[in-house]
Image (cartoon, rainbow, N blue to C red; front, side, top):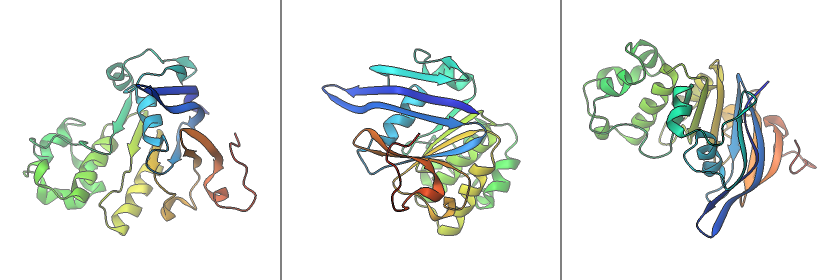
Length: 221
C-alpha cells in the first residue's frame, strides 16, 4: 500500500529546476531507496516529501490526501520524521537530552546502539561523525513515526554498524525512505523499492534485486 508519494513533482531553486516532474511512491510499512549522485535530486526529493522545499508543480500525497500545502512542522506532527544529512543532532545538548526529544525512555535507542550508552552525558557536538549519525538515527527509531526519511543514514559508520542500521530501518513498522549515492550491499537482498535519479529525473524504478541487471527498464513504474 502506498503511503507517501510525489506526483509529477517539480522543484526550483531560483532559475534552476532540480526536479523535473518526478513521480515516485513509497509503501508503508516498507523500505524505499532513492539513489543518485550529488546533484541528482535525491535529497531534494526527500526534502519535498518532508515539506522543507516547496513544489513549483505537481503534488505530495500522503494516505491519499494532497498535503502539498501542508508545512513541514505540521507533517512532523502527523508522524513524519526527517533525518537530514547535516545538522541532524543538537550539538549543544547532551546525547541524553537529544534522545529525550524523541522519547522519555532512551532504552530502545540504547539497545539499537549500545555504543551510545557511555556517551549519554557528552555533548553531541563532541561526538565523531559516525556517533552523531547513530544518535540521529536512534532518535528516529525512538520517535515511532509513521514516516521516516533519512539522508545517507550510515555516513561515518563502520561496516558492521552500517549493516545493523539498515536492518533496524528495514524492520520499522513505518514508511521508510532513505537517500543514498549507491545501493548498499546490506540492502541488495532485502525487499525494497528503488528509484534512481539522474539530473532531477527518475531513470529507474523497481526492486533492489533488479538494479544493475542487463536490460533493466529506465523509468519503470
